Length: 575
Ligand code: C2E
Ligand code: MG
Ligand code: MG
Image 1 (cartoon, rainbow, N blue to C red):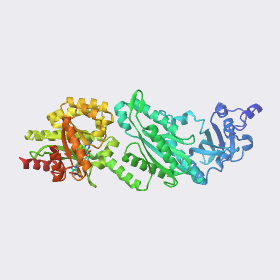
Image 2 (tube, rainbow, N blue to C red):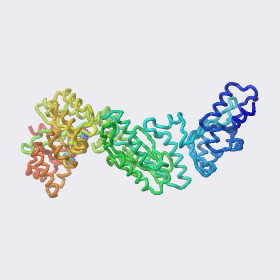
Image 3 (cartoon, protein in one colour):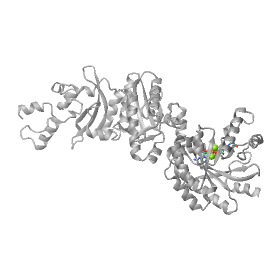
Image 4 (cartoon, protein in one colour):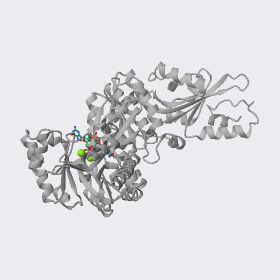
């Protein structure tokens, strides 16, 4: 071995050759070892340095020839605790390898983060570890191509869930050692699935990129933003001084991500929900921190769009309950656990049932009857509402046709959820439901809520026109609870306003509600719309409505929602 070669590979391992005619394999190893941009080092089974390449010296600042025979500082940094090393050693023993982020002291007082990948080499005969080979990459700047693919999301260029797991563990250990607070935030894009379905994947992807960019502007340089799932992001806020600091960041994010966002020329209405867990209050390890931030995020989603929640212990029970319901709901349709009840709508003058509202019910095998208020939000979040809603529509049409054939031409009201209403093919689904059942279109009334209709009035107008062309009726449900624009209300091709139950509860005693009800009835008349009051429970309420010109009612005073056979009994009673 010439002097020159010896100098170049001054710290390269003893390849095992006698030093005379080295094999081509060894020569190749030499070149690779010397020129690799990753820092590579080799230790004996005790961790003592045998060899290291020039990149290792550059990255760590270690004088390699002097360090030979010693344990390199990166493996015994004061910054890493015994738990960390136990885990590392266990993994090396069990799997023969370990990968993760470490922090090391460069000797100049600067703490640096590096990606360490260690693997053991064994003697093929005895199976004993002969040495360890490690590669080091500067976590901040030198991310290699292979790591890039593995740990980074190609769309947003953010680190992915794998890296989140590693980094979170690292940051928790760091915070624990230094008695610091840190926060984990999980963010979910409200109705992302719907946006994807409505505008297509290209816009969906662009939206993810836009949100990723906005998130980066809301955090400090030391904080890390991850894309942790399809429409999920995570942020680790390290070394926060107070819990409220996380809330401040969350508020900044909510403002920054609140729609409409301009994506490829489209106005995309969106927002995010955020769940926050704080170390050490909300979890002492990675798993618990993630679980609790997730529970908080679910709670935020339930609370409404565009909000954040800090984890509270009570959320776990709720999250578990919700998760169970979510799983069970996936198979509810195929297991015939869903059914519709019917609630009569009565014309006061004649006391006759003129129509009914189809109201969804879930007979859970263990939990009994679950009200729609509990499972419809889950169905909406998971996208299951589309198949469930279609099923309600189809079975309601078949039922109505059956009653029509019996000489009972009743109008059936079917509720549409926001997701269904934004579905591109809603018109064709309604059309085929009508065709399959053979019912007359004017007996079908589709209910959309006031807030749904006003969210994007131009789109609403298009969808309503398409539906009206089929000959069906349109009702605005829960009227009075949203913010209607009178000018749109005039332009929408609607037939009915349904006065929300909340206004009827205290009438006639509450003069304000009484006035509102009176005004809604008058407005419906002036717009030439039919009006129906829902949730009528007392004779006094009914009398007030009649006195003010509301001819149709629905409520417990007449009948609660009932199963099909019971409804038929009510019908027979009146003939
Ligand atoms: P909604 O469409 O406003 O339906 C009226 C709700 O008021 C029904 O609750 C009904 O049972 C209840 N109700 C009627 N009369 C009275 C009364 O006199 N007193 C009281 N206290 N309540 C009365 P339900 O069946 O629990 O449904 C709740 C909501 O769930 C519905 O509100 C609707 O928004 C949604 N929903 C029900 N079925 C479906 C469905 O098939 N698809 C969709 N997308 N939503 C549905
Ligand atoms: Mg309704
Ligand atoms: Mg209603």
